[in-house]
Image: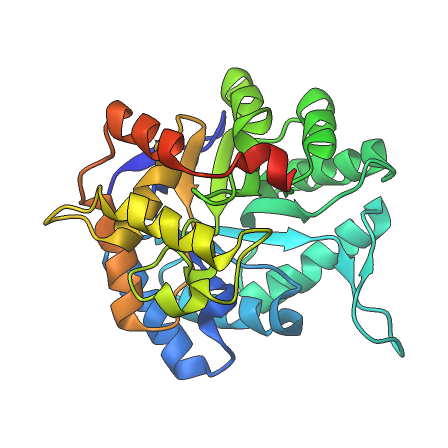
Length: 302
């Protein structure tokens, strides 16, 4: 699998990683799926303390035992469970981040995290304090690098300006092109990599996703989504399925170092990974796909 450098870091990530959120909580099949991914060249595993109240990190930790040197572990922080209350509260404070990292390390059964990501963020956050926490964790050797997971241009812009982030995780696909107008060009200019989540748009752009279209996606009507699937289908080849074409679209932007599609079955996982061996979209194909899309995507969904 092709590997790309993550921003200015020393991390070389396979262009197709594994978004672990969809693994579920049944340990044995989840661990087996991660092992299958690693056996086929995946080295980027993305999880979060939020997923299944930490259970997802525990599963990832169990799966990487004995294989830690093969894996780039990315996890996230910022959502805090408050005892006696339902759900999670947003807490980007230095005190919480420096506490939460130890909980994640314990669940992951490792003594360092390769990429620690702020899991969201608002413009009202105490950013200097947040950044200080990540910088101290680097100095302490508990994390190697840090980034942010966000779709908010104003927040991303501030972290680009103030912090030494190496990556931004951003929702990006043919049907969610919000990042193309400002975020992706900015990050490309600054040498900060994008980790693209949702490249097949919750299955809407997958080979088996026709049924999901009728439920809609973002502000799209089912008719628009069917039209987009039809357009994308024109660029399917003998060696590149609809799913793989959608993944190649997300990978086509030079700012994108990796995509992290989820998988809940071995078949789905291997099909996603096979996109790495499929032919990249040509510049002409990318332009034609964009031009034939009926919606002004960035403006409509900003």
